[in-house]
Image (cartoon, rainbow, N blue to C red):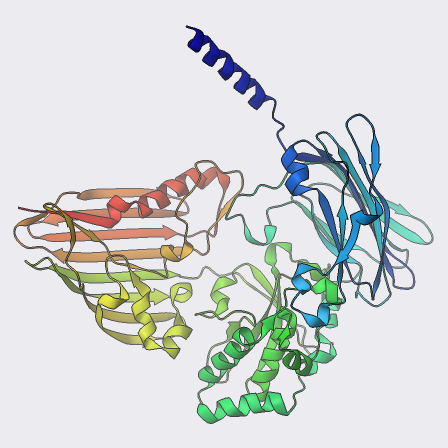
Length: 605
C-alpha cells in the first residue's frame, strides 16, 4: 500500500511539473527595427530587442549570445545598450570582454570577404525569468546599397508579443511595400523632410521546426519594401562591370582546350558547368555583405572561388567564349513578385540560362551539377534576365508531367533464381537526361528494390531527350530468393528517381504547417511474375485504393494460377499539401511505403 501511495504522489508531482512547463523557451516582449534613408544616400539601421528567458535551454543553448555581421569598411556599428535584468530586478550590464569581433563563419574560406566582421555579444547574468535587452545601430556609407530595402520575415524561434518596423525616407522618395500573411497596414507620418511608415505587428507565433515546410518561407508573415522598383533593381544588377564578360588568356585556354576534345555543344556546356561548380570554391556569403555587387570573371577565376552570383557570371563568360549564348538569371518566388518593389534580398538563387542554337533552352546552376534541366524544378518561380539591353522578366507556371512508368516480366525458376526484363519511361523532372547523355551506363543506377545495378545483365537506351527517356533492361539476380523455412521473400523493383528520391520515410501524425513535396509525380508499375507450379503468394492484395482531390494511390498483388499480376500507382498533382489534407496524404504515402505491399511473400509446397 505504501508503494502504491508513493507512486500515486510521484505521478501527481510529475504531472504538476509538466503542467507548469512554459509553452515556449523564451518570448520576445518587444522587437523594434528602424530603417532610415538619409538625403546623402547613406542609411541607418536601428535594432532593439527585449527577450524574456523561460527555460534553462533558452540561455544555455539558444539566446546566450547575439551575433551581428557587418562590413567595417562600409559600415559603423554602435552598441547602445546590452544589459540583463534578473528576476529580482538586478541589472547586469555586459562587461567589456562580452564584445568580441570574429570572422563570420561563412567568410572563413573566402579570402576576398575576410574584411567582414561578426560582433559576438555575450549576455552576462542569465537565469530563469531574466530579460535580455540589446540596442544597436549600423550606419552604412552612401553607395554601398543601391536602395533602402528589406525582406523581413516576421517570425522568430520564440513568440513575439510586439514587433515594430519603422521605415523613414526623404519626402521626395517613394517607398513601395507589401505585407504577406497579415492584414497590418502602416501608420504614415509625413513632414517636409521625411515620410515615415510604422508597421506594428502583435502576437506573432513562433516559427515551427517542422520538416518539409513550403520553400522560400512563403507561408510565413513578412514585410518587403524598397525605395526602388523592380526594373531599377534589375538594372542595377545587369549594369555591373562584371557583366561585360571580359576574358583573359587563362579563361580562353579553358574553352579552347575543351573544344579540341569535343565539338558537341551539349558536351561543352556540361563540362564548363562541371568546371565552375566542382573545380571552384563556392563562397556562401549573403549578397548584402558585398553590396549586391560581383567581382569580374577574371578575378573570380584567379581567386578560385566566388559567390553564386559571381559564379553565374563566370559560367556565362565561359559559355559565350565558346560561342554559346547565355545570360545570368536572378530568381524570386512568384508569390512574392511585385513589379513595384525592387527588393534584392528577395532573390533566392542565381542561375544561368543557356540558349544553344540547335537545342532547347537550358537552365543550369553555377554551384551544383544537376542531372536534368532545372526548369523542371522552378515552377512558381519568376526569372529576372540580367541583360541590360533587355530587362526581360518571366514566370514558370506549368504543371510538368513528372512521370515514372515501369512495365516488366519477372520469372522465378525452380532453383528460385530471378530473371526478367522491364521497360522504364521517365518524364521531365524524373528523367536524368544529362547523366544519360554523358554516360549511358548510369541507367543501371536507376533501378532499386529487389533488382540492383549489379543484377542488370543488359540495357538499351531506346531514346533519350530532355522531356522523356525510355530505357529497357534485362536482369538476373546473382543470389536466390531470401527465405526462412518454406517462405521466400522478393522485394518488387522500383525506380530511384520517383518517390524514392524524396527520402520521406517517416511522417508525424500531426502537422501545423503545410507540407511541401519535392515535386508532383505520377509513378506507375506493372509486373507479371511467373512462378513454379509448387509456389504460391501468401500475402495477396486484392486492391487498395485511396483517392483525394490532390492524388491517389492504388496497389494490387493478385495470383492467378502460376502468375502474379502486380499493379502499383502513386499520383500527387500538387506541390503543397495543406494542413487540412495532411492526414489523407500521410495515409497515402504510408500505404505506398509499407513494406508488406512492396514485398512478395511466397510459399513453396
